[in-house]
Length: 352
Ligand SMILES: [Zn+2]
Image (cartoon, rainbow, N blue to C red; front, side):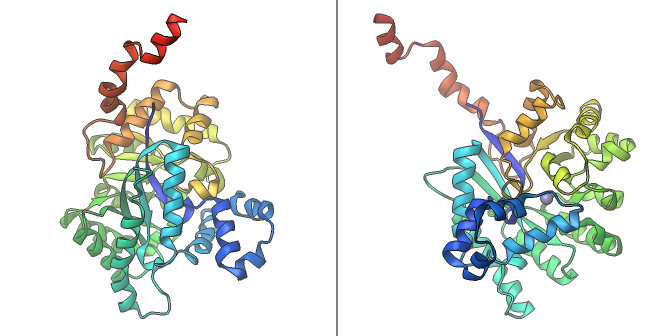
């Protein structure tokens, strides 16, 4: 049995279209009226966009319905799907807590409410019947102020039992003016002992090497092997893992076809840079993790050996995976020994 880890999944983009559409029908008459037919909604929700900005606009639709009261509804369904359909043993869920707070409150009140959001996400992701090891990554956001982003870092630092790392998200076109601010925030995060990842080198607009030294993993990072392969030696020496989310690059118009990722994988393997294959927005894409794997295999972008190397890397680089080995190694003792001993069922069969 193979069990997987997903290190890069946004809470907003994790809602599959059918769950979101049903939610509208049940609980949001305005949006239900706007999208009366499921098929049309699915087409609208999952179609390819021309740019990362256009693609990120969709997140606002989900964010608008994900609040302190409704989060358990969506998270329960996320965990259920991840367990049943994706064989996930480990999942890091990321989101911007400020954007889940009540927008009618003052900024100070919204900052205070972030802690309650973290609690709700934590509680909702522990589902007895679908046991997955989960942790949260809090995303700073390019559209939010320094003060709010710093409060997000503080929240992560004060709640390491629930939050494993911080990230920056929200569209890389806005990094330019604020890059010094984010360097400062990452320096501060590291000084408080927080683990770090960040959306960087995703599109040609997001290539800021000055932020690289502060990251323990790189959210996407595909432009490094594509355009700046000279940086790979340093990435390898810092043991930074690339979180590669294949379907995203097609949906955002960053790549035209998946095959363009072959050079990304080849150059990373050659340089000794680890890659974790992730979904980013499994719901928005309607592509679950096993299908990301399968697509890479069927298009000859990677082979089975490389896939396993990436799957092992996902557990090795998991910020809150509590074991030193992936589940396959842990299960050998349980299942492996059994496979060589005939079971009672097999004994019965051989007697017939
Ligand atoms: Zn992402």
